[in-house]
Structures are given as structure tokens and as C-alpha cells.
Length: 174
Image 1 (tube, rainbow, N blue to C red):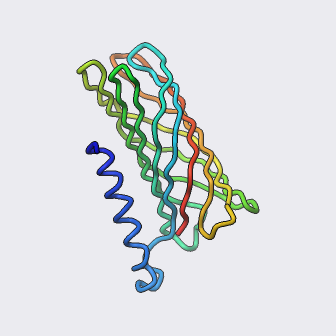
Image 2: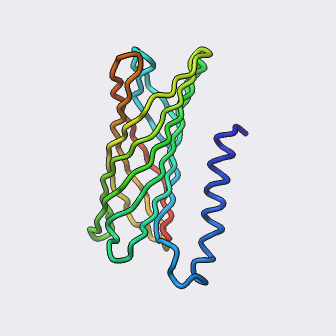
């Protein structure tokens, strides 16, 4: 198992084990959700735009009971290509959402870092991620299905890189 996968599993595990404690904390812990899914992206490798497949995961905390529409998101994704190219994105930022029946539409703006390894070279540009989507509440208690789209912007070697990501997967609300 790669270090990144182990880190993501550890983070999700700690988050899941902390949830039963929230009942004992009398609501002192924030509410939120955890998302894990598959992802498809059109990414720029220096100057060449290529298609990638990978994963996307996020944890959202909604810390203010008086403002349930405002959350803070930690998002990570990984993309791979057979030509020994790997890319990881780590971003953090606010998310604004609403409730429309079984749907929960949202928009977010986040910033962070991209870690790209290609042919032995490593690049770490600053990443800006702007996007949105919607969660559809499933018949199972506290579970939703997410549809998400993102525009990701970086600059490397004086060139702008405009990338796109589509993700879908399961959401657990707590």
C-alpha cells in the first residue's frame, strides 16, 4: 500500500472513530460529512493535456449550528497514468451549500498544493480549485451520492495550466 493511501485511510479511520464520541460531547463536535469516490480528469502535464483516472476524497466540517450552510472542506485526490505519471492534489477551503428536498447543492473555493511526478521529475505548484456539485440523499440513513465538478488552476514554468475534474461517489453525513 502506498504512503498516500495509508495516510488517507488513517485520516478516515480517525474521523470515523471520533464520531461515537460526539454523543458524549453533547454536540460540542461539529457536524459534517466524509466523501470517497472515483474521479476522471483532463490534466495538463507541463504542456500536454491528458486524461487521467483516479480517486477523490474529502472531509467537510460544519462547525456553526447557526449557519448549517457554511462548511470547511479538506479535499485530496490522486490521478495515475500508465506512463509513470502520478499526481496528488491537496486543497482546503470553504463550502456553501443548501437543501432542496433530497438534493444538497454546493459550491466551494479552495487552495492548496499539487504534487506531480513525471519521468523522475517532481513539481509542486500552488493549486486553486473552484467547483461545485450536489449530494442526493439515498434511502439509507445518513448516506448520499455525490456528483461533483471542479476547475483546477496552477502555474508552472510561466505557463497557466487549466484542468478539469469530475467525481462521483458515496457520502456519509454525521
